[in-house]
View (cartoon, rainbow, N blue to C red):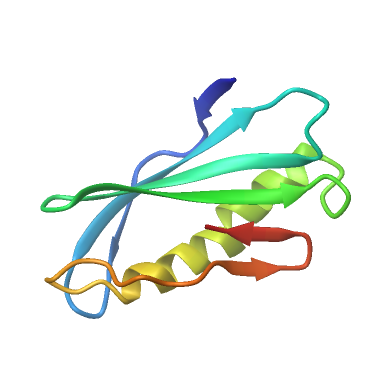
Amino acid sequence: METKQITFPEKYRNGAGEEFEYVIHRHTLTPEHDYWLYTIQAKHNKWGFRAFGVYATKKAFPKQELAEHLAKTLAVEAMKGRLEQASEEGFPLVFPSWGEGWWLL
């Protein structure tokens, strides 16, 4: 599996004042896979890295460009929603986020 960083680092500060830096990676899978895979790597100075997996079905997103746009927009917003729940104690356990043909773990 080939992995490529597709965004420059961006910063996000949640409502509790915790600051994160994140980047998005594209994972190239074999043609037999029926989904596209991206990860959003969020880094916190105290807690280190937290990876969020973004899965987009090829049925809902037949072109990789569409899946990549999803990863850079809706999936990032879902990830930010998760980061909003972080406090100085860390991250709470949360359920996956999903939409039509995609999900974030």
